[in-house]
Amino acid sequence: MGTTWIVVANAARARLYENTGIGKGLKLLSELEHPQSRQKGSDLVADRPGFMQSAGNGHGARQPAITPKQNEAEHFAQEIAHTLEAGRGQNKYERLILVAGSPFMGTLKARLPDPVIGLMTDTLEKDYTNVNERELGSKLEHCIYL
Image (cartoon, rainbow, N blue to C red):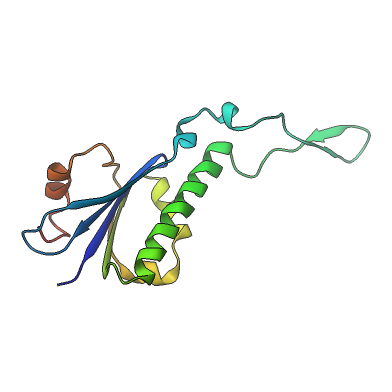
């Protein structure tokens, strides 16, 4: 039985746990924080929308394709994906379980490279970032070997 990494995340916080087999429990490997995801959208932009020439005599205000909060969530998802890819490249885990609240789960999965996705065996759309290790273990007992 190999090593399993468990990522428990939301748009502002992520915890990376390791399980090495039956009876070994969960070991916290690292915690990632992204405080920008907790800020108000208005605090994340320094300026009003840019202007562009529109048809006719008026000017139009350009709105960003995504909100500043979504942009920060994507940055954080990319940071998590980089951590998972580095661990995979160093053969630190053979199996991945992803636990993240919706809609961050979709944002995170979209950033994961194919080799990391290939190691993913289970996903759970729940925000368990404030749950302690013992409680987390019981919530995930159906997919990890404690």
